Length: 283
Ligand code: PMP
Image (cartoon, helix red, strand yellow):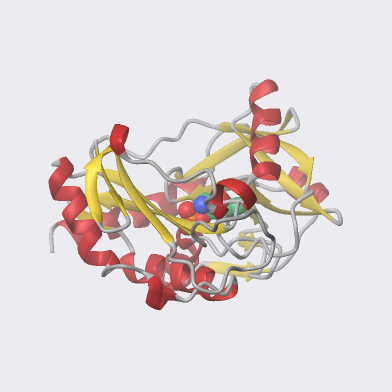
């Protein structure tokens, strides 16, 4: 495939960065994943807003960014001739001559983008029940920044994999807050509940869209913390992300949720979500 690196478009095998890059040495960078359906960047303004926020939170001056991200995104899609894809952006604090924790004063950022093909956008919603496990959240206190430093997330996800589960739910101070790479929802007495935005979670673009749709359709919604115990007692549990979209969870730590199948509110919200996507492609 063709990737973008610091102003150039080149084959993946020819794209390389220095071992002195701060992304490699310190995990000093941020990223973004944007779904592309029918050639259109899905929720692009929201993704760009989050990318800019991540950059400014870690004090990377975005005036160093070499080009218009939207234009580069479009170029990458056409060079790879893909209609449905996930677009990955990564920006690091660049390379310096020595390994030094202090930010270098005049480094150019490293800016990388790649596309990975996805199956067609017209996919039917997947009601397959997912299994999750709970793990202690050992991440730092700025999970709202989409940092490339993901060791704790990778360890949690691998733990889920080892237990034949689809995702690991992070539990902090007893609260079930989000997945290793997804946001978390539960339905309790007809109310859709998800953790509020804070430094403890990533403000997911899919999470935001689910809340937007739910409110528009007049569903009861609450953004508040809830415990692992609440989750185990919930009528429905879902996880969401740009790649997973909205997935029903049917077991947590081996305990069945509801009747062990995707619930009625999941079916309802998924229908609205699919209609929202459809509207975009049809103009
Ligand atoms: N939380 C975490 C920790 C994530 O890594 C992700 C996916 N990047 C999400 C939530 C979901 O965010 P989005 O809906 O924007 O993909």
